[in-house]
Image (cartoon, rainbow, N blue to C red; front, side, top):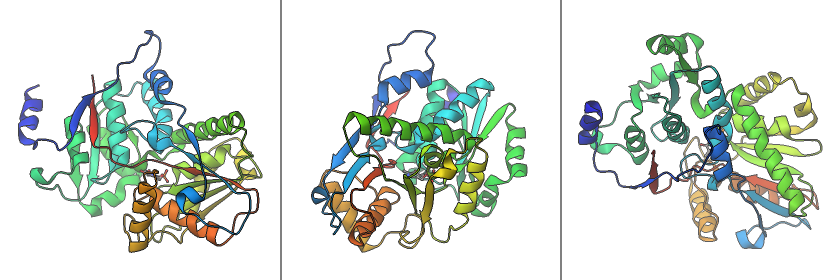
Length: 349
Ligand SMILES: Cc1ncc(COP(=O)(O)O)c(C=O)c1O
């Protein structure tokens, strides 16, 4: 408690409003995951006309749906819930006492994980890439992590490169007995089934809304877990297209196929997955004027995008449509994976 007061004293007044987490009404044998699912899922599957989004194509009869996973929850949004729900189960099944994970100072993954860990009352240790900024320069995400009492450990970029090495991870686990490591971005085999359940959820909505069968699932790619999870559940002739947001990340194909190999199901081999490497705009979080204008325009049209992930996916979609790459009658599902920083923060109760 004393430590918390000390931290609270050091941290500048947050530039966001703290609001309370919604109160769940639940019976005692419901798990936190059950309650979360009841409260926040399914995420909407929305129909958008190409005109509404200033998209043009010479092909006829294209259906565009947007899977609004960005609306799931202010902090556990987009692919975060999908990737972390399976990890949450493992933490609880193995009765782990501490969670260790990795990310940059703007990590969506750490924000989501911190929120979940706070709710299940398990401490989180976050290894952060790069030098610690002066406390008065902490961005709202770091402030949020601090608010949730996450132990923040800043390491040099050089050291951070070891984040996926099992020896390096073991060293951290030795420091925190009975801990579990969740890799950067929450991408591991435990992430796949939660992402796959998003595909099943969307397929049900397609039937309920009397839409044509899905031809393309499209999604941004960072660490590859989301595109891998979708691929495990996609069925031929559906295609899964990922748009890589990093430059020079051709290693992702290998990573995705090794994640897929861990699945015993052979479903994934029937679907055609592909990662596109031409829409990174210069690299991770890099932006050019075309991207900036597009994000502004589409956000003004009512679909909030951000430039790091969903903006680049939209840029790809715009180009694919203009190039007439989708066959007539295609039904494209754009998966909005979130990442839009909300200007209000739930506290945990
Ligand atoms: C908002 C958002 N969209 C997409 C991705 C990419 O997902 P993945 O790392 O599973 O490829 C991330 C990173 O996890 C993300 O934060």
